[in-house]
Image (cartoon, rainbow, N blue to C red; front, side, top):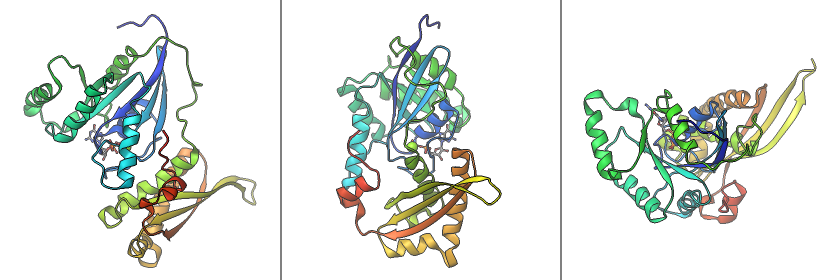
Length: 305
Ligand code: GDP
Ligand code: MG
């Protein structure tokens, strides 16, 4: 394929939780800007990543997964996912091909079709499909998607199929100039990225014991100087939970859990910022924060997209 003129535009990643949207975005952009974890619903905020190639510029918007709402937080997640399809040039509908087609994918597919959204399908996690099942799996998804639907097979974790996906995406974008500087890879406020790095470690280290009722607020980011003149970034963050039992789990025996969370988060922060970081973590109980809209906004979950 050859594109004679430069192209630029917006692309949304949409799909059930845990299908690999954030991993795919990271792979395409080539830098860890969005958190990934084996636990569903890690990504709560919209997140853009920018890919600049010699043929075009793609601005990616990562979204929370589409799922049926249970409480207010869920409603907002779904609303964001739906509004993320508005005004973009093309949507990537990401599917976990290591599993058979299910109702969740059908739900999203029907939403995209009825919404008349322009979309391409990505069958991700292909590395997990054993060779003898591959033909069958493609047949199963052809049946779900319809014979004429184009799809790209990828493995976000090893990059297989990603260059082909980028080429395919560019054909959907209008001709146009670069919309962002080449050096820019992300337009998220630093606060959101930093708080996500803490939340990622909370989810990884506590698993089901501290469910999704956790938020992280960055209270302070400050450039400081050591006696020897070297600078570092001091970050103060509060982890908000709903119950005091969860606070206990998060702190752990003599602070052991909080220490593990803090060390890993700090190391990732320091990669993101590209410099030394001093991180201080506090845990606070705010009962029912997920049900209070004012709290949702305070902790960064804005309804407005
Ligand atoms: P999201 O909720 O859709 O953003 O999913 P994540 O990107 O957080 O990925 C969920 C889990 O699937 C993580 O443990 C990833 O490492 C894993 N994963 C994502 N893509 C692939 C893939 O192509 N192959 C394999 N084996 N695992 C993947
Ligand atoms: Mg994600």
